[in-house]
View 1 (spheres, rainbow, N blue to C red):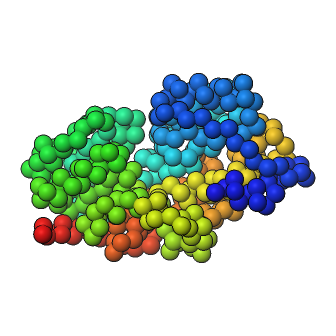
View 2 (view 1 turned 30 degrees about the vertical axis):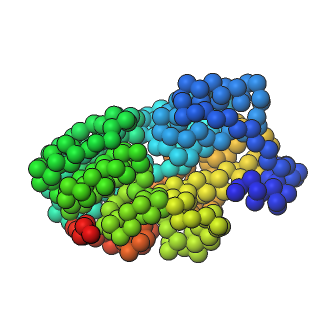
View 3 (view 1 turned 120 degrees about the horizontal axis):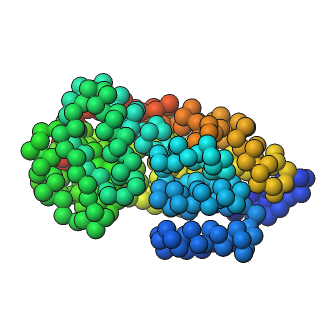
Length: 348
């Protein structure tokens, strides 16, 4: 969408000259060693002017030291970076756009749960960097707000039967059930929770809950389910216009109420920084990006030590309410947190 839009306008203005965007794309097969080889190939052999990011937390973690070594700016998209935070001061070429575990999602969730009197929490997580980071942050933030973690279970990626975990969580009587994992787990897990009649007072899942396909799959049963959510159309006319442009002609399944606004804002920021730099020099671009504020779909947008500023995040936690993924925690909430969540629809 960006390439089509910018090229239709004549390209990016670099030093008074409009330059069209041409892309070179490699499929890394979701394999991190393949991705790292391809990034080096793009830089060393293909000699691209700019890099755009690979996808997933693990891929970003692996790509960051490579781009910094070659002094190429990388604005990350889909994927978090808790483990990167201590390293970012030594990697000035890396800019993380997405909100994630301790920047600033789990702390906001902890405040929401504590305000409703939640005392006990059961956590399941995928045995991968995403799940490990979120469970680690939750292990600090939740007890600090007076909550006890009564269950903590890791899951391999290939797991499909969650009945034993669900029954154990049900037996624990935990007020909240948190699943720090991906759609391949969340879709069957949610269905099995319904089948087994497990309806905790609060249920939050990771990537997947925030997508339109989750609502398409479960319909009214999604009511009250929470996920990481940063935005929706209600937050501003700019957000509404972006959503209309981005999702035009696409089914509701395509909607992403966590990341798309942040990625869009990050790319608007990147374009303005390139134009302000006035050249293809990545070192100068890095310096501009680390010191500048630009107005984007997010409003005032800037980075703090390589992380998109918390003040630029439109929200942190979302909840399905009446078919809309409402922002219930963060800077620009669109609805109040509903607790306890409604019961599952009656079986037909």
